[in-house]
Image (cartoon, rainbow, N blue to C red; front, top):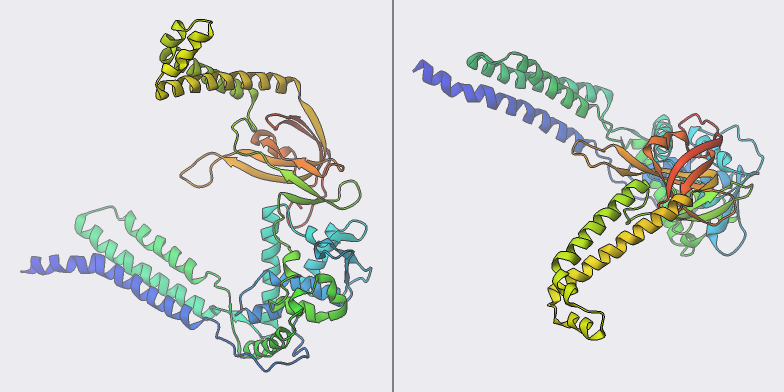
Length: 481
């Protein structure tokens, strides 16, 4: 009877205890997540005046239920223009041709994220001018780092003003972490009982404790964003009242960025409140459109179109591989023609009457023969173009506008090894550029902003060698544009 009772208790300890321990932690975690969600805000009465001193980026955080949005950078740029640190000029009816001008008014009272936006404009400006749509980045890592730094600065400012707070406070994070360790101990206790009963390796008990403990503590310490405070809800209600007033102006959403000269800070706050449907899409501090890039190489700003190779196996390949494919196509084509159509070709004479026997072949046989001839033609074409490309190597010189990973090897363990990159070089004259294929072996020899001379093959678009004529200046956050 004792053995039976012990046997029945084994699953309770070895399975039930870990499951209950993890379930209790999960219930507490989910409850705290639900309880810490930002509360809905009831808009205040519509009013025309600015209802508080909060900057537009902070207002955008409050009215979007304490979620950071891309409007933070856009509204900050418009606010800097409204405060005359920058100037927006629209030379023609198309707002996409708006330019940003440094006014020479040295800003000494900017907060960290306002300074970050201003510095981005100054960094991109040539002779104090930059196209509005040229503020985006060509380097994904730098774009992500810039956006994260901006978000941290905006959140820190909102917390300083008492308008926001973390979803999980430090005491709550500590409590969740302690409960996670306790839950991991429950898992380890069940594992210990099993190992003791079965005589297994006791090292597994250590892993049974450490793995869930690290996972649960990491979840407890995870940044879940911001939540409301009483002062933040009151401020959000006031600013939503301004939003209601701006909505009453039907033409407000269609104002171009340069209208900030007339509308002052209203346009900046309208961007933060999500109302500037014309101005906001033109202002981007994210990744640039790689097919339409801005370049200042040559001394003046201009936008260039870029074509990228894709879909054809010759792109980026060494000519040896092209010749190999040509031989394989020729071998397969000759096999199809010789084996399937051999008897027919042997019986066909040079007279036109002999060639009329083509109609006597069945559709399948005829199709196979035609495919064989097509492969032979392809093989000849590949060999001819490879020979021409061998003697047609040329050079391109200019500034590197785009440097991006294109192809990776297939892998089940995450991103595979890089094979090729895209490389776009602007010579300062052409408005239509082509992207070259840069093999990984020489990809690190240049970076965005470098002035280079590249030896290339026009047909395969393969870069053979890169020589840097002038390095791009180093930047504090990361390399790239």
